[in-house]
Length: 152
Picture 1 (cartoon, rainbow, N blue to C red):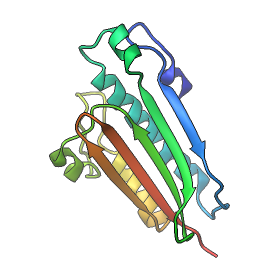
Picture 2 (cartoon, helix red, strand yellow; picture 1 turned 180 degrees about the horizontal axis):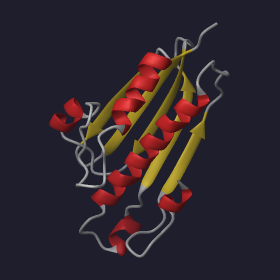
Picture 3 (cartoon, rainbow, N blue to C red; picture 1 turned 120 degrees about the vertical axis):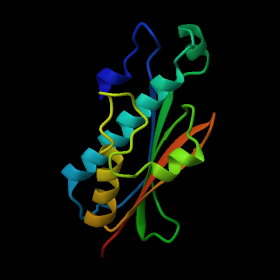
Picture 4 (cartoon, rainbow, N blue to C red; picture 1 turned 135 degrees about the vertical axis):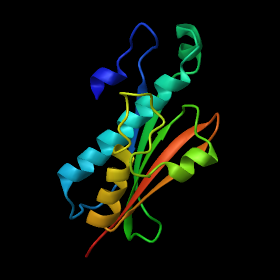
């Protein structure tokens, strides 16, 4: 994904803030989780690029695009939490309600298939017994949060 984060003629580099906490090892399907992480980060980049439309390079530079990735242990110590946040334009309640739907996309024709978040939720919930949720506010950005149970 590094090539998508690099600066280009339309915008400066997208900053990635990594705040990785102490978390235990998990029994999981790493390839599938990698697919989820790639989907969520790619969507965050797409959302940031969309929120930059109509802005000058200087305007974007003054309010830099940022993706924040946080890993923590839940308070009850039974789940690993992974949060991927962007400071894009956020989404409406209507979009949030449909977000994980099969074939739902907000992207233009030829850009999105509407499969990424649907498959991501399936991987987290059905294959890992976890949960994938969204929090978003118009004008403030979006956070996708993953909770995966720690099996002992």
